[in-house]
Structures are given as structure tokens and as C-alpha cells.
Length: 528
Image: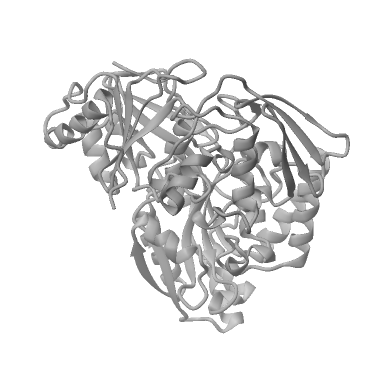
């Protein structure tokens, strides 16, 4: 069944024409006039999995979604502070369990349906209520973000109240994350499980077309409640191979490229391009299977951390575009990061000692590597270098490489019985998010979380549970620092790198900036 929107307008037609002409540009001298004015062509790292915000986890997908949909709140540009969006203001009860939002008047969905409190209630009931008639239209992998929500009440058309089971410090921040984006209820009812191919929101752009493995096209929303978008259309092209993305950018086939390989940055040092960089809460790590196989022994997990030369990875493979990671909390969360925590030093002799103590010399390891994905930092060269370091201390590492969405399909359900280790990258909005979703015992895959290595420590569980209900940031910070120290010692992951994101735009692109959220906000971008 075809789900493409066949009523696309002139902007979408021009966008699709640009896709065809960009292929001709590849391999020629730079020809930055190849793409039409008013149509922004973005080279992405992979095909999106879905355009349903309740069904995806990858920043690659989120970068499209935040231009189609909006949430009650958003991140203030350039920060991770929360600001009004579809809600103009809100109040919080003294005990921190009731949030009442006043909704913006005059907002309509892309089909003209008025936005109201009923739509908000539908979205959260769909996500959180297993008996909801449309709950099964998506896996809701990030429903953990709103697990404290007991009920959502449409008080009146422009007032909605959330009642929580207990105080939940990250609640507003999570509402600003793409999981909190609001979709049109009637579109979900009409499309069911296929809604992710026919999205309808309230954002500055509306959906035009999705050609699988070619492009997702979105068009300017002429009825947007706020300032209109600066371009007529945006085309998101999946170009998995990094070298091909670079070549297309140099040839003028695309106007913007996210996650530029470090080795390619020097090619864009000219007046024809602008390189943007922005620090943010990113962690690139290796998930270790702590349930079965060699990494069930903490000594072997620690040995892997000592065996891998992270300074060399950051300096040589990543060309200095990242810093060595010390633990599970990125330093971008300055208030919660434990600055006293030191990265595991490169010490292959200590790694061999620990392997000998554990009787794991010569152990065979299966290592899942992806060809590319959001925040994955040259994953194939990184994986190859890591393999060499582990082999050098006596381990026998076998790499299996997968396309990004296939990779997630292998890793997210858990490594038990399949692999010993896997690459992973997270870009998060709050110090709670990554450890709560990927380090708690109750976040094992069979319980709906992303703890794919099955790490379990009751003390870590207790610290995380306590931190998320505390409304005192100083107390939360201390709890997170205690968690970091324990996790650092337990070594359920190899802590590799914290990355500074980058993007390249052509000289024809104006008003673009990267966000610390790693989202791609394109409303104000102008393409000449």
C-alpha cells in the first residue's frame, strides 16, 4: 500500500526535482546552484524508522519530527531550559504532583482541526493506557519518560491537567523532548499502525511525501500559528555512507550535512561552506553483556575499559572532535556530572592481569558494529580500532556489521544469546534519562527498557529512583554522583567519548544553528 501524500504542492514538486538533479551534481565540481532556492536538502545518516513520535528513539528520526510537530513546551533556543510552545504557561502544585497547562489559542493541526486539551489527553492516554484503542499502533519505547503520570484531564478546551503518582523532576524537560510531541488524534484513528507514514501535527512544516530510501519531503505550513517557516520545503535524504554524504555536499547535491566525519571537516574550510559546532549531552559507549559470556565477570568488563586506548580513538579516529568519557553522565550536565571521576587509563598490562584473574584469556567475543547512525562517531573505524586493542590483550573479537535500523533491531531487544558487546550512542535531555532507561534492573529489555547488557545493581536502582523524585537539584546532583562512582567501578559499559556535534551548510543557507538538544530546528532557516 502506498502511503505517500499525492496532493503535494509546487514546493514538494521542486523538492523532488532537486533530488533527481542532485545525483547529476555528484562527481562534478562544486555547483552550489544545483538545488532550487527555497528548498533545503538535508543529508541524513539513515532512513527514518517512523514519523510517529511515540514509536521512535533515534535522533535521526527526531530531527524530522520536531519540524512537523510541537509539544506543550520546547527547549529555549541554545539551551536545555524549558520554554512555552503549545502551552503558554503552567502551574505546579506545592507537592509537585499536579501540572496544569494553559493551551495556546488559535492553533490548528495541518488538516485544519483545532488543537485543544482533548488532543493532548488522547496523545498521552494512547501512550500510557494499554486499554486505549490505539495503544498498539506503536511500541512507545520512551513511555518511561512519563511513567509517573497517573491521569491526564481535559479541564476545558484550553486547560489540561497532569496528575503524577509522585514528584518527578524531569517531567517538564521530558515534555520538551520529541516523545512529548502532539499528533492529530483523527489521523491516528484513520491510519492506525500506518500513522508513522502519514503524520499530521501542528508544526511549521507539514508532511508532503516519503519515498522509501530516497527522501522525506515536508512543506511550509501556510496556516502555522507562529512566524512562518523560512523555506518552502525541506527534503531529508538518507545517505548512509559518510563518504557519499561528503561528496554530495561538496558537489552541491545537498545543502546541509549533519554529523560530518572528523576526517572530512578540513574539506569544508572555504567561503562556500559554514561549519557549525555545538556541545551537548552526548555519550558514545560500548554496551557489555553482563548477563552471560565473559563480561558477566566485572573483572573482564574492567579489563575492556583498560585495554581500549580511548585517547587514541579521540585523537586519531575522531580528529579531536570529542573528549574521553569518564562515566555514564556527560559533562554537559555540569550540575550533575562528577568532575572527580577519572576515565579508565589505557593500561593493557592491567587488562591482561584482570583477564588472567578471571580465567578469560583468549575468550571469543562477538561485537555488533553499525554502518552509521545518529551520534555514532565513525562507527566502523572506531569498531575496527577497538577490535585491535582488545585482540592485543589476548581476546578474540569478531565484528558483525549492520545497517542502522537493523542494528537497533538487534541491540535494543538485548544481547543475551547473540553478542557480547555493541556500540551505542545517546544524546539526552536530563541526567535521569540515560541511566534510568539503560542501567536500571527494571530497564532490562524484557521489561521494556534499553538495558541491553542486563546490568543490575540494587544500589544504582535505588539512587536513580530517589533522584528522579527529588525536587532539590543539589540533592539530585549528589545522588547522580554516587551513581556515577558505582557504575564506573562496575563497568557495565566501556565509556569511550563525549562528542561535540557538527554540521556543514552551504553558503546559500542562513539563520541555521545547532542545538544542545541535538535536534534540528529548521523553521527559521532561509535557503537562497
